[in-house]
Amino acid sequence: MDFWSNTTPGEGPNSPCLLVTCNAMKSPLPRVLSTITLSLLATLKVHGASADELIQKGDVYYSRLQAPEALKYYLPAEKLDPQNIRLLVHISREYRHLMSDAAQSDEKVRLGNIAIDYAKRAAALGPNDADAQLAVAISYGKLMPLAGTKERIEACRVIKDAADKVIRLDPQNDLAWHVLGRWHRVLAEVGSFKRALAQAAYGKLPASTFDEAATCFQKAIELNPNRLMHFIELGRVYSEMGKNAEAKRLITTGLAMHDTEKDDPETKREGRELLAKLR
Image 1 (cartoon, rainbow, N blue to C red):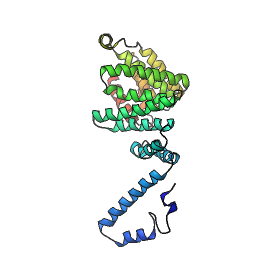
Image 2: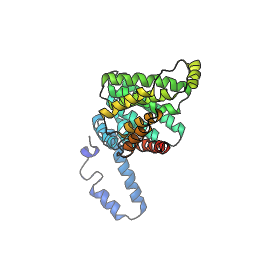
Image 3: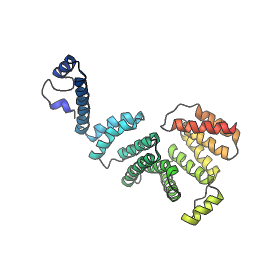
Image 4: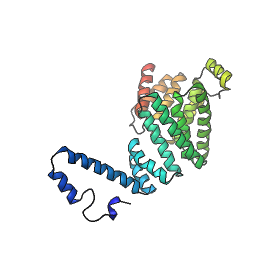
C-alpha cells in the first residue's frame, strides 16, 4: 500500500508546498531536510507494503546482484512472511554475496554463518524443495575455506548430503552437479598424510577421485553451457589429471564468456592464474 494514498491533497514527496519551499531556499539546510524526508518516506513505504510487494521490489535488485538493496526489501518481508521458503533462499544468497564483498575474514565468517542459518531454515521448511537444499550446500561450501579442520570435515558431510538430495529432487539442476563436482575435487586433493591425520582426529574422510569430479562438471556443462564456472572448474580438474591441453581449452573457453554470476570475476582470476601455470 502506498503511504501517500490516504493523505490529504497537497501532501506527498511531490507536493507543491514542499517543492516551492525547497526551491525558494538556497541554503544547504533545505536540501538536507529534503534528503532526510525522502529517506523517511522510502522507509515508510517499505513498512507499509505487503510481503509480496516487498519481495517483488527486492527481486529487482536480486536480479541485478545488488545484495544490500535487495535486503532492504527482503528483510522486512521476512518479518511479515517468515516461512516463505523462496524468500529465505534468496536472503541466504544475498548474505553470501555480502560475504564475497567483505574484506575481513571475521566479517566473511559472520555473513557466511547468517547465510547458513537462512538456508537451514528454508531447508527445514522445505525438505523436498531443491532450491532450499541447494542453498545449504552452497552456503556451507562458501564458508568451508575459512573453517577449521573439524568444521571442514562436518561441512563436507553436509554438502554431500544436500547436493545428493538436490540431484534426487531435480536431476537437471546444473548447480547441484557443480557443487558435487567441487566436493569430489576437494576430497580428491587431500593427500594420504593429511587424510590419515584427519581420520585419527575426526574420523574417516569420504573417498573421491578426480574422475568423479570431472563427470559432475561435464554433466553441469551439458545441462547449462552458459555458466563459465563449469568450464573453468572442469579445466582445473583436468589439470590435476595431467590433461593440460584439454584443461587449457576449457579454461580459455570459460575466460571468454560473459560474467553472469557474482563470483565470476574471482573465478576468472583463478582461471587466469591456472592457465599461466599450464603454459
